[in-house]
Length: 291
Image (cartoon, rainbow, N blue to C red; front, side):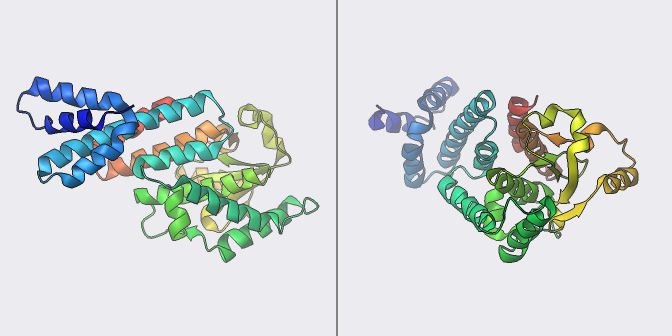
């Protein structure tokens, strides 16, 4: 059980001029973990010294970030089939107070709306057309073309709130709903883009099975209202980029790879705006997930 008096006493020592004492206090506070965050937040509100407030903020962030890394490690070592859990962990990096139940409820609402209209007797193309109509027309999701690299548009909670996202967040949300509907749709790591592939049937080993190319029915561009296209369009896209057409640019990838794509996108955007600290932290998250 946490002794609040001890915590508060330690907080009062944060501004001690002796560096050794200060380091000891910070180390001790960090050792308590997430349980003391509410006490730290209260102390921040009561503090009038901006330097002390900054010290408290740094400790809260470090505690939350350490907990985040632990969660992501547990996800990688555990049930990696649950992509949503990993995506929410990454969202909590930027939004530590994220209302996870609210996010899951919104996704479930979308899933149910599509489920009520889709029949297993429909062809894959008919199913995706219904999916697209509900996802883009009824719910109003669309690509944010004005500032595609803004970091906030990588997070699905922002997408759910604003209805605007970039290729990664739109693709991930679409994929999450498709997974919950048990549709054979997978992410594809196309250079400078993230698309989806609709296969003939669900197969767990697809992400590692290069023969799956013969079982891909079509691809889906979620950034362009679910536009359906074929391998030929990918060939042309890669030719335009002057990129060698490697197999991985056509094949489904597993959940861990999807999480890596999300984190890499965030690293790129934060690096472009000069946020070195966030880049370093995100790289440590990428190292946990990367295979």
